[in-house]
Length: 395
Image 1 (spheres, rainbow, N blue to C red):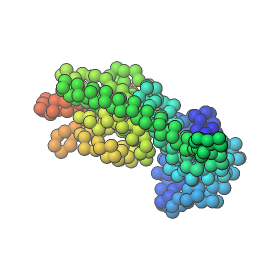
Image 2 (tube, rainbow, N blue to C red):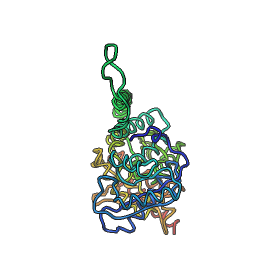
Image 3 (cartoon, rainbow, N blue to C red):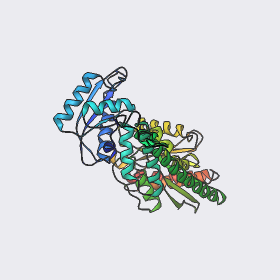
Image 4 (tube, one colour):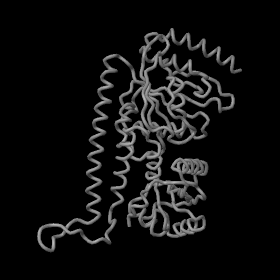
């Protein structure tokens, strides 16, 4: 049964984490990395992970997602640890979530619900809050199936006794649907305003450079360093949620607009992609993507591919892209450098947004792109000189 109290924001509550391997391959290091990410997500949502339960299945169970024996193991852990929430690093169906809540006698969150909790905490602007509310309403609406079936119908109709009215479930569905329409209407206006802003930038021949990357790759720190802005940046997942744009000047005086958007993550819920379409539109229509990668992350190649999968989903996969390998200050023998494709275009730049190493190379690479590579030889000469000087200093 759906419990409205269970939809309240999380506080400092004890949580049991559940991470299953459905491939039956015992992925080992991958499983450990996914569990570490789940712990960080849980902490970002404000809960305290007290224990984690894993296991292997060929496919999810229709009743509990996990098997009945594993479900009993989770229930015992919830009781033993006095946990008030169980967090599954998987997508649960509404029936699975309800069945687990009955069995475990605690709140149950799946991966989408957990990410929504974080987004609700981090949204600061009016637009960001609207986008989070839309995603939450769409998610909750799927959890209303068979909720409140114990309530009698409300009185309605005409006559002394009154005819059949609507159930509490029907009433809540109607209210949620109405609110979704209102929020969507507000977001449509936001999208129109953004479209007007893009049209003005297009007339002024201002290229838009969009920062993309896995959450916690250092996008916001890089944005602050390049623009002089002071948006919130921290070593945590989804530290910033609201889109930010700033005008910058590149070497040679060429102007551009740099956009910082929400970080991506493995299995980013489709509902979030839809709710944040106004924000992600800046990425889809950018002239260049700066794909920020955490060079110090052992899983950075997988993270890079996961970001490209999201870019494919939102229709931004074919936009020109420069990979910015960040946090080289945390990599052994990490040094600033620039790599090119076979056609001479910039492919990858190694930098540290924290201490500024390699940012001159990145600025020149951006200027080269903004100039349409008309002056490639001039920029390449300057970049090669910078590379030699900075590499010499690093050694």
